[in-house]
Length: 366
Image (tube, rainbow, N blue to C red; front, side, top):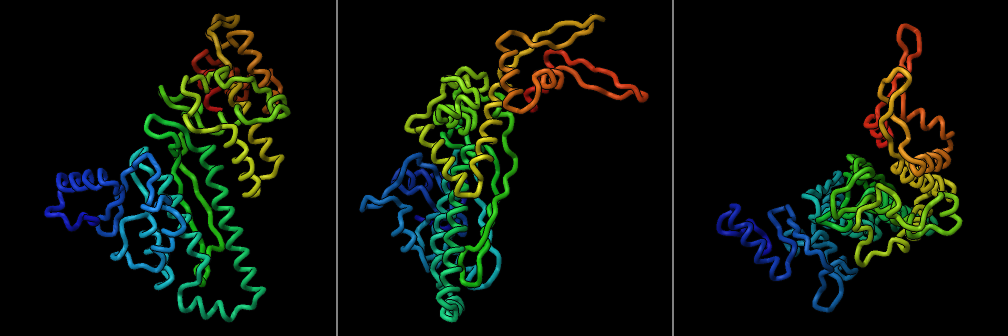
């Protein structure tokens, strides 16, 4: 039963039983009226011919089909939204939601792939007429724009995942941020623009991760894939485990090549318009963050016996110096930033000392 509205009673027990039955039969998608329920199989599903259920021939199979005639699939909802856009000229929205590890990231990729692929075909009658009236040069310009926008949108995915995704206990590539994607289309139904808003990034993951989880992918990709010249420039050691914020035992993900992904991310950063110099600056700042995470403090006192923070060990001071160098500031000024602040009281500057806990908190907040 592909639509849960057809069960004898739409209650929790019947719905769960039907979903379990379909899942065991290899059907991970089920309709609930206009809603698509997805159960993450954590593996690639294939058609009887051996191709992926997201292969190009599946896009062809769903193209132009009414929703009630479709099998449950992300392509079905994407097709319904695209058809409504072309038919009624009204903005369409697809909300992809679920708990961590449910497959939201991959589902959004399938939807975007369908829309960017199908948008190259002028199906609407008005679009066909308009297309005929365009000169060859105008048609080529529109096609080139669509191709460029599609490349940028797809190129942004690996970049966003590198800096915003991480391994969790539920998912090896879990998004740690929210994403709002807008595709802009012309009257021919072609993608001519778009943008992505990011929000709610899990910034605390940079400092600490739960047992069995990793920091953001970009750190491990840089550590594994940076060239010898880059490692020297960014003062990177051989092992990621030398950094406190990367010291979890599960540094490697089975089947994932961080070095290869680093090369891929750099290529996609170039594709979306980030220059080589900007890329170097970004990864240099990542290296600075790693060294800053190795700065530890101890409790001491000043001349008046007030508690104050001090750099704990020679290794911590060396980490501070490397972080300062990568950030482009003097080590003494960075240490001052971390260990005290200046407040103005009655037009006089007063130094307020941080204790070790406060200093570490300031360091983490950077």
